Amino acid sequence: MLPVEVLKEAADEMLDYKGSGMSVMEMSHRSKVYEGIIQEAEKDLRDLMNIPDNYKVLFLQGGASQQFAAVPMNLMKNKVADYIITGQWAKKAYQEALIYGKANAIASSADKTFSYIPDCSDLPISEDADYVYICENNTIYGTKFKTLPNTKGKTLVADVSSCFLSEPVDVSKYGLIYGGVQKNIGPAGVVIVIIREDLITEDTLPGTPTMLKYKIHADNASLYNTPPAYGIYICGKVFKWIKSMGGLAVMKEKNEAKAKLLYDFLDESKMFKGTVVKEDRSLMNVPFVTGNEELDSKFVKEAKAAGLENLKGHRSVGGMRASIYNAMPYEGVVALVEFMKKFEADNL
Ligand SMILES: *Cc1c(COP(=O)(O)O)cnc(C)c1O
Image (cartoon, rainbow, N blue to C red):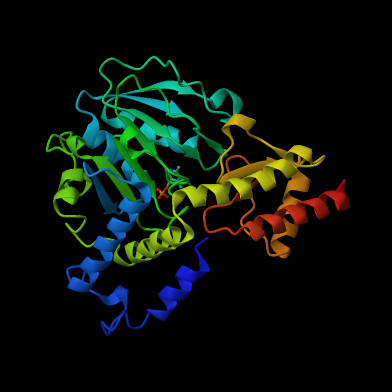
């Protein structure tokens, strides 16, 4: 979901962006106007996340999935990295890293269908690990790291695709943060990488394509080649929207209020149950089940008919999942809970 205000503004500017006589879709990415757009987007993101000066912000393509390869190609100097497996996206990143070096799965919650975050306070971190990798919010299973793992001094790398800008973050705790923007920020086609400068080097694995080298993109301020120009423009508008709401602390309060409403209902319902242990519940993705597959399908179908979209769980787990990202208003969650109450009364 994107904020309606953002979509309206983009619609207003569709044919003529601020007197330039053209749409942002038609501009040269080398034009002064476009340079202004991408620079302002970066500045607003830096403000929002309080990104320290020794970090670069890169606007790239290829989705979060391409970073599964880019991260090891750029950071695996010793060809060793430790992965914490908390769901499908972490597992895919781990499997990709195995192509390039010795990736170790040092913890996993696969034993209980990824319904919790493993204790990461004292993990067997490899002596020579180039980094420790997490997927901070597990989109499919609905878990979130509430405390970051103790990496014992090693660089932390995090995929934040589904919790990007949902709450304040201390960037200095990470070596690299990345995320596809399509979950919580903007349109598909942009991935943002926030990387500490000392990790950007010429020393990448042999065979690393030029387009996957962080240094190339950092040296060229994300304009080495044509960036996903329109997507970045929309992301910039969403950054301004979040700023106008009061920033990430306010975003967090709003997200907590929305999630509480839904989780409180799940905890008292006789029909619906959350699938994640309470301590590790995500603010963004809330999976739940009735315990009966037929009833689950009926719920998804009737919810859709009532205007409540995208409630089917990921195809790998079934059940239901409510994704209540930043742009979802509180009233949207109220409508869902009201519908669930009625469904429960009608079907129990
Ligand atoms: C959706 C998602 C991905 C995959 O993103 P693509 O941009 O489709 O490659 C990776 N990680 C997480 C956490 C996701 O939610």
